[in-house]
Image (cartoon, rainbow, N blue to C red; front, side):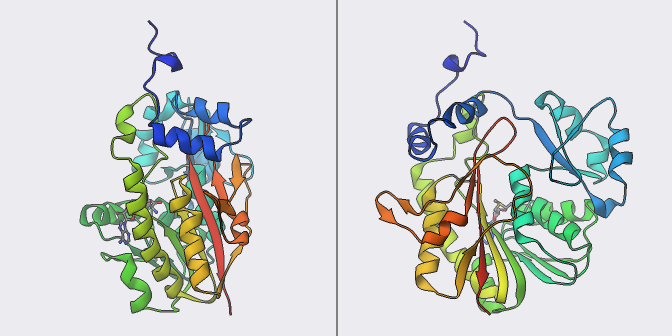
Length: 320
Ligand code: SAM
């Protein structure tokens, strides 16, 4: 028997397969299914805060031959077979390169932070998005990064140091308290929320879903509801809030946003800057027979494929 054959691999959890049935159109399904049966391509970015030209960095990677990701400056892709070599490469250790999924970068592209602004990253560890925000700000302005889990906080701190981030202040804190402590303080807020984590699922390793369950989805949604209110409170009038998760479950995505939008009328969904052709679906405007805020059609659900991870993101603007 050939253990590499998809039919021989353990099936995805039944509740997750049912979710895919409900969400993914039939023409997209084979590509999504295939993404769970083989290792993914590895995507990385050249870190401008370490002040090396992409061309110099790429030359140092030889014999690896990265392919540029169209539409994203300084972002490259390598086959899955190069992952271990890249992960252990000295350029990663010195912070010149950072391995980061392109959907994860898209959350920062959606936030569009500018030099000199006040920016809040409300759920920051291990800091991949914080570091990209700092790079986009050119290390200028104020970047607050919040993480309540001590071990993850110290990992965040070490990562930001390695990646040359100099404008971040780190807070070991529950993000749900931040909006009350500093209301209306930030030009932009990223809430890359703790979630039931479906992005890492692979049928090559059933341990990848060992901690996932529909119950975890419900528990995550409760925490997300607290955090998004705090994020909205911390935002200045006229400011931008980006909400993202690595969960495909509408209960953690559109439903969290829908509850917020029903409660307050000072936030409006906006279209997302979308520089890279990522396989994605528009956000849902109804789920399980219940209508959701029509503006959620502007959100995006990135599909898991051979080179992208499952991801959800939505951008909101606060009224001036
Ligand atoms: N943005 C990070 C990155 O790109 O590297 C990943 C963030 S991860 C999806 C979610 C983070 O939220 C985890 O580090 C988790 O420990 C943290 N978290 C959990 N509860 C939180 C809370 N109450 N307030 C803020 N962050 C929380």
